[in-house]
Length: 212
Image (cartoon, helix red, strand yellow):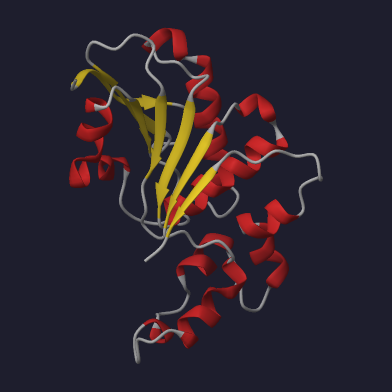
């Protein structure tokens, strides 16, 4: 099974970066769908990362439809624009299931690095609003608590590396303020903090965390 139909640069909003690609597997009726979110410090790279390491090929080969999205960079608009873009794409996926032929009732989100941060946010948003209909989250090396990233850099085992990151840091560019100096702003954009504040009856989707 390989990609049969592809739909590139489909708009889901008015900004030039609010576009996505849809890749349908060949010979599969109503396949499940994965939303892939690229990594790039919230300010670089794009949806074509789904092609790296044959990720798209392998998902299509397994009979899975793939949606790969761009989002607004932090240099375009600061948080929560990126979270709002993910929510818009989730709603797009559900609204357009009949158009493309996938089964949006079987939907997972997979992200890496800053995209994994947004993938975890998709889980939080799904718990807040079950209409987003998310069944699983896959998070590859996500920053989960933005207020603690500076501490991680200072305490890692790579002398002279991360602690010398140029200011403003990626998370400061995302927030518009220093997460180290404004913990409330960092907490507001941190999926682990916001997940801990959900009502006791809220249901988070199954989540697979990968670090290393």
